[in-house]
Structures are given as structure tokens and as C-alpha cells.
Image (cartoon, rainbow, N blue to C red; front, top):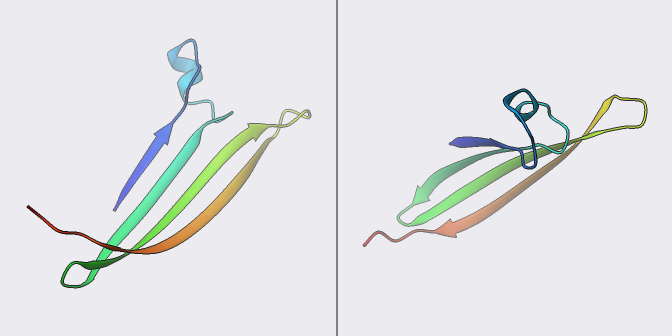
Length: 70
């Protein structure tokens, strides 16, 4: 499991945590059998609207993968 918050193009530390144009990503990876695993990802982005409120957009995805260690 993991999560990342990222924001680009800010001028000071106080702007780093303003959610306008920020991105949050959270994911989980679960081993099913042998090298086979399932993944789930959630992303949320924020945009300031003309009325100075925030609108967010959420996206979910799921997948299957194979992992080999060397």
C-alpha cells in the first residue's frame, strides 16, 4: 500500500498544501498466487472554481500484474 500527494508550480511553503491543481494517488497491491498480483488505484485532483470553491475529480482503476524478482 502507498500514497502520494504532489503539487507543481507553487512559490512558497504555504502554497504547497493548497489543493488547487494538486494530485493525490493511493494504491494497493495484493499477491494472489506465485508471481500474480492484483492492484487497485485511486486518484483525486482538485480545481478552484470561479466561486472560489474546490471541485474534485476521482478516478479508480484495477489491474492484474506479474512480478519476478532477480
